[in-house]
Image (cartoon, rainbow, N blue to C red):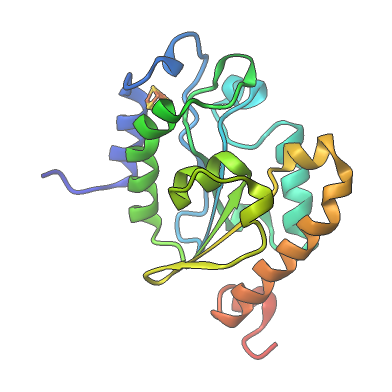
Length: 196
Ligand code: SF4
């Protein structure tokens, strides 16, 4: 079996036709960011701007995500960001379960390559896919799960916060949980300090 590498992942995503979402897209959006990061962020799927640029979270929701990370002093370039599906669903609809299932092999490979200490799930689609539960973000947000050595937290997708700013208070509480866990695990000592 070929060794798993980031280059192999990118080639695999680029060539993938496992579900119908690849029809009519401009670019695949595999994900990007710091490949040494202890923190992995997983969203739903690319939107129009992401499809145009081939980059995850570069539209209005991505700009809000950058501000959310800055609020806990995390520069966005220090995290790894990707989506549950790597092709834009038509009209930004929610990816179907079969599409999420088809794309899971890429997400699993990314997780195996990154080996994050902490995963932040953004929204219901990422929560359903990664937690393997048919659930809603309102039920699972703000609660830590642990899989082997990885801690997993779910919160609202930034696009949900753009639609309903009243959710920002809960999202801020989730972000504080995230920051506290990163400190507890000794991640980003140059940002948070070893003994803070
Ligand atoms: S969404 Fe994922 S599984 Fe479907 S074609 Fe694109 S890369 Fe392949």
